[in-house]
Image 1 (spheres, rainbow, N blue to C red):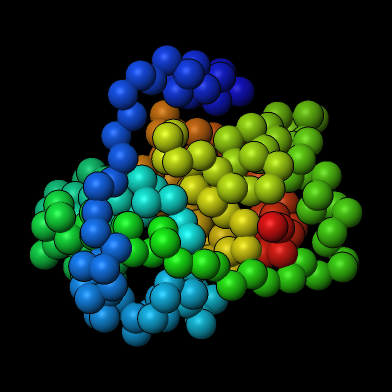
Image 2: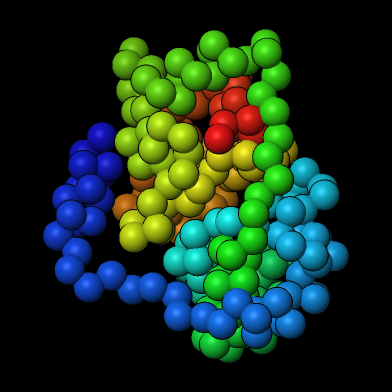
Length: 207
């Protein structure tokens, strides 16, 4: 909770936030190679690959930068993924900004939350779990899962459940470590397998 509070205070005191200044049309032309996994408009047809249509440009830019750093540092810094890091490695700063602008301009295709997890998933997402020390997801991602572009908190609404599940498991295991102040690692460390399953399924229909 302290780390979340610190992030909020830092965000409130930010007077000159950095925005991705990309060209969406140029990004569309550069996105052809991305379509195999993410679809032509960022709506990935496969659950293991994230939907990035409509994602905050600032967040996409950060992830591309981190993935590239993960490759150049041999996984010691940033975020390393064997597929995406190799794809990000040759990208210039302008390429990343253009791609971020393009995908941010697209509209995500939403999923549906299974009825069986609507109540329990909503309770965990909105209120956390006091006994386990799990903060509400809304503290950073908002009640609709929209996130925050200035803080580079991602929009997680409508995301594939398979992808959400895999990322929460990676944060929990420390295999992904590019979260600000280790916030997601702290939260994920307290999540059970059932908690992760609930949140993953709940978020796909949150919009």
